Image (cartoon, rainbow, N blue to C red):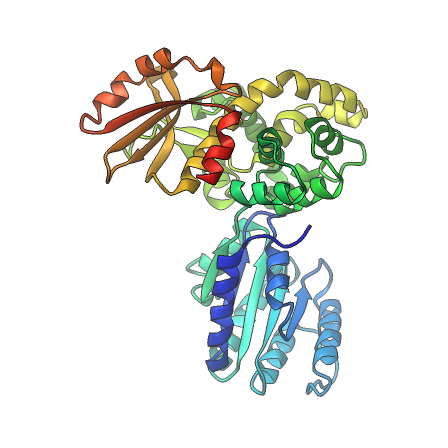
Length: 442
């Protein structure tokens, strides 16, 4: 699959590189795994003089041997003396070379130094502060463990706090970008675009896997994802166990419950029979795995809130793969696929609501977009979009098939909501998959 999107990030990286000619610059690329951070950094430097240094899980001395070999390949006259066993000496050498000519260095999986030698960060900070003004080094630090990258560069007590000139939070592809990708493969069916959104959440890596394996129907997607040889079968564990550490069992239990619709703190606690407030806070703030949401008109201090898994693939994985791990262990993938087929319409209905909220956000016409419900989850409304400047209020019911929308019932449920905005022009809509193209093109 060719490189898509990221024009804004590439433009900002080019600005930093231009500034590095007058003094070193540091950029940080972070975000969930599989979101395309490494690919973006390599796309940026493909026609530029650069070094790519990957922080593998091995000793610092062995890493330095690899890095010095790369430096000598790009700079044959580099002033390397003796054996180098510490990254501080590699970084010092890079800054020394950059005094003579500008270049870019990418340090991928930068957070891994926490496990190899945590003092690297204070050593880099000291060298950076002493040499950045005289050198012309453009540094890009890439990291996948969100909690550690946040701590390294945004923790006020950490040595590299405030050292990054730009922090990029790389997000999954937008729905419009996914539509462009599928169009390039001659797929224009909005149902397949929605299936890609549900299964991948816009992750470039997962989209690439599906398109390269010709998975352009629901059944082909299902067969690829749920199979003994699927690279996605253990993906949830691979993504999160390193983040969560030894307490991953509790975190996984919470995420499994959220994936099956137990979205309130009290109902999760009643099932697990323990106080999980701290876990929910860390899942949201430290790991960025879940998000909390409130009725679109809720006040900031309102306790009427629910939780959702931020990543669609992880939501699917916990709902259907992790929840059926016994079937995974016994290799009964036909059973899991049958469960998915049975439950797909119910599960997809909630995802479709989110799909449309994202589509409406991408139009740029509204400043507030969300869902709505009243006490005890009464009068739930799938989508509410507001333009407070123009005093416009859109209220919509979302179904896989628009014909199933009951417009009279929708208007009845929205009476209290509308009463809160007496001067707003109100529009009601029923939305189904047949409306996707209109919103994308509009």
